[in-house]
Image 1 (cartoon, rainbow, N blue to C red):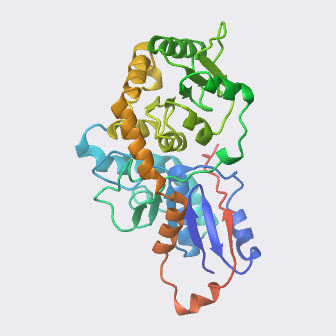
Image 2 (image 1 turned 120 degrees about the vertical axis):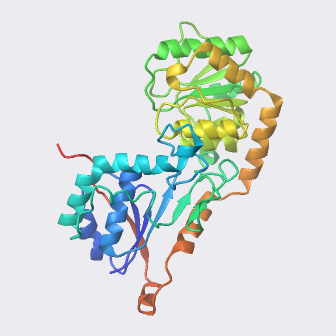
Length: 370
């Protein structure tokens, strides 16, 4: 039995003649709902691929391949001398948390030998193809990444084509110059009232109109309505950002991509994870100010950030980047990279070429034992 694993949130593609041929085996691995599992996914998928003797390819939104050009996004290494080492350190720390679960899977389900303390982190060091879905015009492929690593471009959902904005929003947009978008999605805000006051004051001090996405953090509770502020519940970014002069957000990879595609100068207010990395990349590309960590969010810093984004040269660079991204097709690039890296088939495997391919999530629990 041969399978091909494509990991982007425990995702697996099976070129098999029958779903029943593997369904029971995969379902027996656990019952966790599929989701973005990061390095835990790398380890469990790598383990499953070894158990099934199947090739594996990772498709991921942030760098996990060691490089000397920038640190691991989950590390906070500042010195270039430590950039490459940071990948091994992050791998090792994550491996400490999931080692028992992975070894339990190997022994009980896959009949493989357990891996040791030092040899368990396969995320960054394994000789496995990676396709990274961000724009090479934002973060070029590092010179020390080999031929098994591709940077293919951002992947987008075209939600704008079917979206009908509320008339109130359309009228507000037509009533003045393009606004600045400010929102943090589903992330919790510790002091939403204070943050809302800072946002409104910063818009007023810079003479800008603003759209505040209330999100899940409770932003936008105004003591009295402001004609230069529009409070928004939900709206596709690919439509909304085209109506905006600039954007301020948490720095998730998808939101960052949408803002840059719309040629919006961008300020990132990172909360955790890879968000500081994207804030630093945006600033390094010259299309936004230095990131403002959420715990440092203040009126002076937001005012400075807005003024930075309003600079005509920053806008020119944002337009230049957006035009470069127009020629990218991350979805096609990821598919091409996946097939490019597939091992050549042996003659006895040719029977699978004309068989249907179906997909299934590998649902492996990543929760620690209680």
